[in-house]
Image (cartoon, rainbow, N blue to C red; front, side):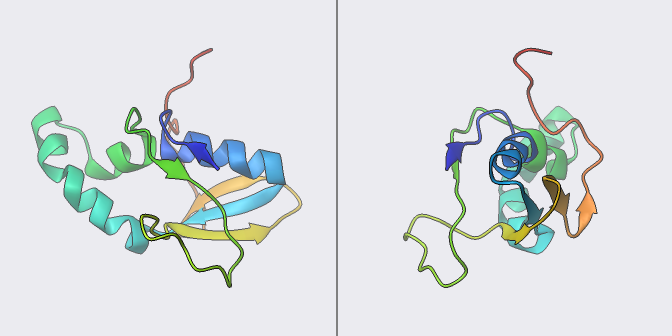
Length: 106
């Protein structure tokens, strides 16, 4: 588990590398988050999906659970974790092509 203050894709990548797994994020499961940021995205002139996938400073938590686990009440699923030979973050089965979030050392 870690906070996603640097962006969902970037921090998901950190989890993927730590566990040598593939995290496949689902646009269907993330749709409510996209809808929530639409007004801000419109004001900023930024695509809402970019805010959801790359935005930070919200200090939400990203965690992995076994498939049979009952999620804590405040958690919502945003994708699945699969075994892999190389760590990766996918969105709907495809590699995400954006920056992925904030890089403190970049």
